[in-house]
Image (cartoon, rainbow, N blue to C red; front, side, top):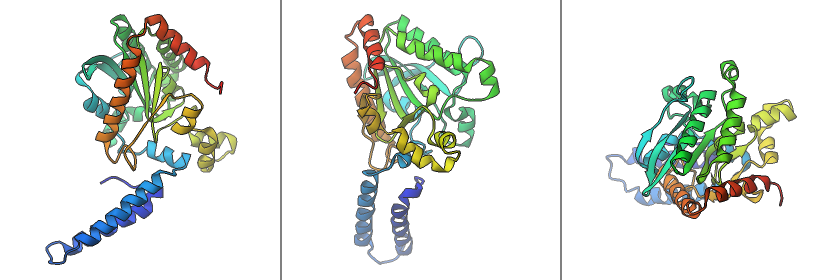
Length: 315
């Protein structure tokens, strides 16, 4: 059963009433179908109304929901004949950033993205999606491979930020992020980036400097987390909601500011409530953008990408 967020409490209470009614009537002769249908309709309407007026902080909570689909879910739902490619050929194989070759509706693509994991063991194994230097160097290697063979690159961004540990810094975390961003901008093949959950700090932009940046309706994208921003500005993480409002982290704000190019719709209640629909919506958007970008020459793609980022903020 999907975990309810704090602001979804009224919906959770209605769902609990439905469960109680069904348990009470289980095996009995009472016909509860009419009452259950009435409450279900009320719960559905309440959920829909709630999600039409989410605050930036509430969207941040949705973007972080543990049941949202992650990299492996998108690969399974969008690609065929996927082959995972491992290692940076220098230090090791980071499990927070995964990538490989596959086909999306018959189009060969290189897909790279953050994997957060879906249970305690896998979250630890994937370091909660926080990439280390070898993860970004692996991404660089895969982008260079795609460029060499004329394969479009698709990136799926979902991280609170790059891993800030001492060992990561010792191995050149900042340099790896900068080189990865540089490689995105230098590609002579189409690059489509999708913010599918959290897009946090340099750990996100290192995989998001594409020709087209897509963003899920309830994803967030910012230079720092709302808690981190609040701790800097107000010396208190408790003002995270105020920070999220001020930072313009939502898809609608960022689309208006021309930071992202396209908003991808989510099912009512967020991608975690119906992952199959969310994945299908993203696949459709990626295919549409591939059809637009693929005919462009390498130089035109680089120029398009350069102009896109240089024009940000010119409203």
